[in-house]
Image (cartoon, rainbow, N blue to C red; front, side):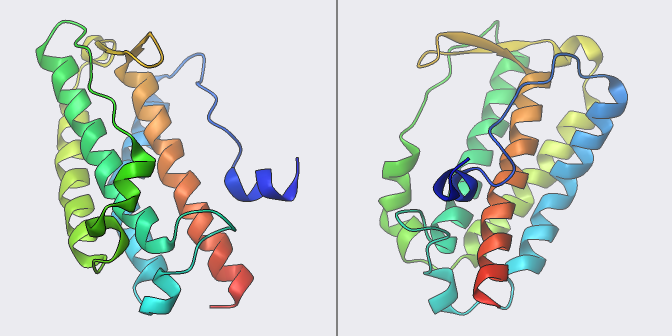
Length: 178
């Protein structure tokens, strides 16, 4: 793996687990529960200059990553709710890169995004803890991938997503000696 690939995928690319048992679901739910606090602890003393530092050459800044996490996790939470209330709904994809270039992602302080992330995760955890095994098998359709995703697999993806972007910021912090 090249240095660029290591910076892009510091924990590796997502690989959907073949079987996700109840114990693994509990572990995943704990990651979702703890993530906003972990992220806050990681970035709470960052200056604006640090927040505006890209995690790699050509990559997003820490500020954009935090806003992306808020945007992405709100979308995922909504996808869960759609899958639970509709029969295999087709979700609305969005252009993450273009969203990251909008002014609210590029220039705003990160506190609003952190509050949104915290609230989204609090609600998501309550929802996740209430689901039965049958509900975790509910699906949504992703039109860009032309694939149906069940909620177990989607949760696994978002646990990876939390850890993936956390590693981007943590590795930058270590590299820069912050």
